[in-house]
Amino acid sequence: MRIAIGSDHAGFRYKEEILKFLRNEGHDVQDFGTDSEAMVDYPLFIRPVAEAVGRGERERGIVLGGSGNGEAMVANRVRGVRCAVCWDETSARLSREHNDANVLSLGARLIELGTVLKIIDVWLATSFLGGRHEKRIRLIDP
Image (cartoon, rainbow, N blue to C red):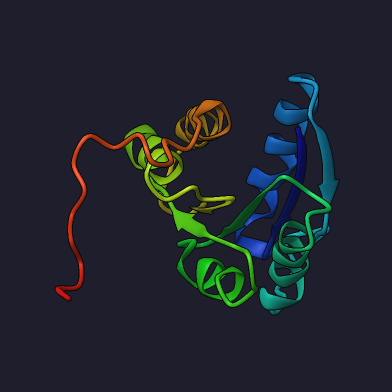
């Protein structure tokens, strides 16, 4: 799979470990930075990840920060991006099955690295259910 990844300073250490993990699994990963733990303005590294996914250059994206919330907000401003903040394997699976999330946002200050790698593994392996839901909820009455 072609994956884009980017982080701010808080997510840098995890990003480096995730890069190794993904490449060992055979994925083609493009790293959009940052390149150290020096403080940076996170949108400078998150938006390019989202844009690569939004343009179809990358199938999926992974963004990291302290909590993952700001990163998701930046990514979701890009047309064609559906970024989900996930904190465990269940939230990752559901974000793919039900929301077709194409960008994953993770909080490096909130989740242990081992859990992050499990989340990524589940998120990459899970397909969107599309129209295969058994129940449909009517959101707007005619």
